[in-house]
Image (tube, rainbow, N blue to C red):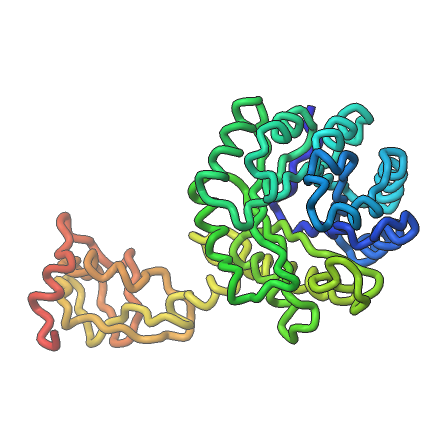
Length: 359
């Protein structure tokens, strides 16, 4: 059975380690501590156990990455260390052995991520389908067809919990190149939750709002590279932020999420007060003395603010036309329904436009 799905009721931040540890277990644990201190909800590990299943030996980065690999026991300690810090775990498995090991050892991550470099690696996807947890598909730089192939493959193998993660690393990524609007399109097309992996420059004066702004679009899952050593020249340092900056991002995300939250078809209490008829919106009042028995016409009515809450809203005017006054109504007195005998067939808006001399 899959672990809990990702929450949808508020910001959820994932601190990414990637290869920022550069092969040092001590540094890996330092990054985990920074992720926990920053207030992130989860830590994301890049698992790579079989380098030759991931890249050819002739790849220019093969020799360097080989020096940075950890064995399964080291990863198991790191996962335990993270959980002891109160963090959820997300495992990005770069190779099939990593995915198989995660399954065999029962690591049971909340999320298991497919990097965009392997979006249609069907052999890898098959290994992912067997893992518990939500499958996160990295879709930066991926075509709609590539995404559809991956989603279809996972679903055909029984995987239901799938998330699409928009964003790409460009060391750092120019905000003008990100196209956040793509997330809305992906969400609509695939009917799947979408997250945002931000890789904008930490030194950008607008970095915090740039990283947090996806929350205003209803995207509550954010991935960020976290470092205990801001500015230090290490792998992925171009997009890695320190604890204090991540705390600011989370603070802004929470504020933005709160601003966006709530039923879009209802009012907050403050807006309901703002829209009250009488104190704010003009109410329908008598424009002159309306004697008992008078059949109301447009000339008998006016719109004015009264300073107190009135029960008849502006849009009720058509039903008032043709009604008969049951008592005398004074000038500027707000119209109330119990002072009228409504017509069986209200005049409607057509009457208003035909007789409106100011039109």
